[in-house]
Length: 161
Length: 244
Image (cartoon, rainbow over all chains, first blue to last red; front, side, top):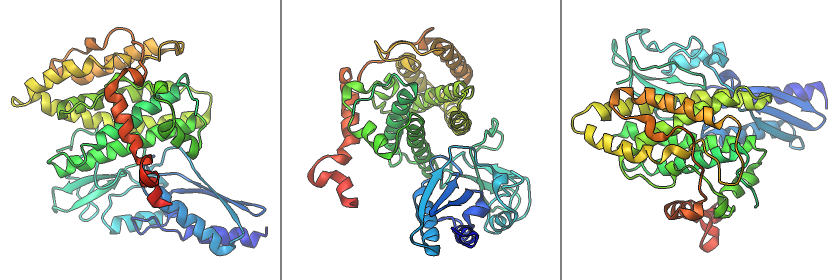
């Protein structure tokens, strides 16, 4: 298989968006490897949390992206059981997440993405999805989410309502 | 399918799977929307952790399905903590605390594995279960400290802790698992710390783990497993038939 095909496959996979937030899987740090060996493509993905319910849809989108380059390519999607961290998010991904109301994942900060205040309250350890923790800003009153990966977060008891 | 639970990963998968199923019952039976969302996530993660252990035991998707839906009942040996429904919220909270603390202890043991995949998975499982511990500990504090719930909580603690002695036990006749007694001690000390301010004595968990019994000796567990398997039973092969 040609280098051009390898490049085209990576290009196609790099445009696949997360089913919930308008950020590509590459920018979210979910895509860990895209390799081509002969007529077989191997894509390694890492979920934010093991129970991420979007895994099936992500996999379908990745397979469709590879097939869009050459439908004869075999696709092997492998899910890693390894830790996803906020700093796996790329700079472009970080900017989009801040704009749509997520705390800065790279800084692993829980500061308000709208006004920057650190005066925030954690409203629980689980929110609308397994990878989201709900917060309220005490300064501007906005509600927002912190993307939570699978790393230990200490006692985390200080803010919980 | 003939699989025994001599592989410790399989014991753990049973505990997480049945617990996830039982927790799911609270998703629509709680008056606080935020807590319903949280319990839904906790249940989801319990099922995912069961799947992770089955994967670590070498099972593919078909094998994981067969483990849950096709294995004879006499091969199931989950902890007594998930062998009955526990109908109250304080009992559910205590069960969640005991199981999440046990999962953290098990992850710690897995972290010394020579297998990189097991070590990586252990780090993820430990972190995710740590969050479960924090969630359940908050509820323990709330229930044990409020005058309207403290007495019920203490009563439930007696009931639930009496079920937990087999968490680090193995099925009778399947041989011992190295380190299970020290793991039991580590677990009971963690539980004691979580319950320190509540007046509940974790000594009820016992000094050494007791053996696990097969599902066939536990009628309520048989009922729960039948409920789980009903998705594959009946006309047109159950719900699965709808998605073909």
